[in-house]
Image (cartoon, rainbow, N blue to C red; front, side, top):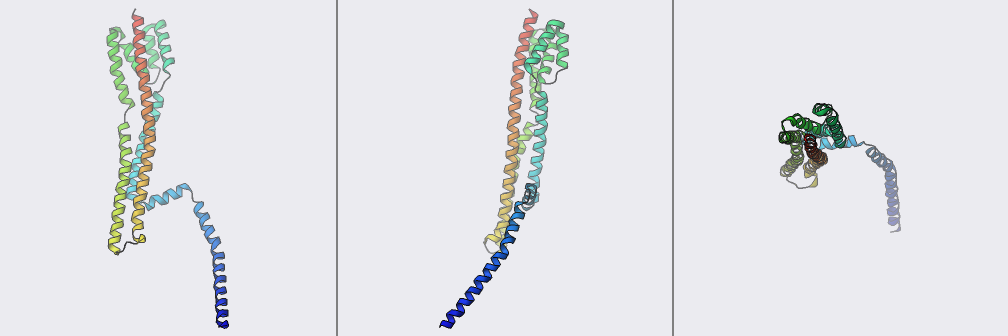
Amino acid sequence: MKQVFRTLAITGLFFVGKAATTVAYAAPMLQEAGKEEAEQTFHQILKQRFIEGEPFFMGIVLVALVLGLAIAIERIIYLNLATTNTDKFISKVEDALSEGGVEAAKEVCRSTKGPVASIFYQGLDRSGEGIEAAEKAVVSYGGVQMGLLEKNISWLSLFIALAPMLGFMGTVIGMIGAFDSIQAAGDISPTVVAGGIKVALLTTVFGLVSAIILQIFYNYIVAKVDAIVNNMEDASITLIDILVKTKK
């Protein structure tokens, strides 16, 4: 009996030593693998996830994101160029009217960019026909300028709605693929369904992230348009008041 216990003890010590040697050998390898994973750049991780998430649907969502960003950047540049110092511009117009008349004021409008200057030019151009004609011209051309400011914003809102829809469509397709795998394998193990569920989740995340990015740009653009429109309306009222004073 003592001999049996001695044999078991020796065998146990052997396996413990073997296991310790294996752990000691594997630990540096695990650390190295973790280090390599940590050293992956964000671009590499994003590229890997994009490939894993069914490139067809991910590609469609990416196209929606790129087109939406192109529209957003174009609108932001246009709106920033359309923004002017309204108070300074009105002061220049008043000085030009008092010194050189309507033609001098129109020249100031021609040399100034932005919708406010364009509206002022139309009002001054019709000022010779009376205050009512000038006011109608200001109102009409204000609507035209507002349409130019809001150009393509509806397309941006379309891409905001389209990106998550495409992501959810990829989710449905991924779940269908998962159930097809279950049907083919006759088993419901996690390994069978993991691929389809992973595709579903990745397409959903990518669609939602795209929509969030575009929504931020959309809100900024809408706020910018509202601010410019308010300046246009205030400046239009000021122009009519200036013309009334000039006619007296």
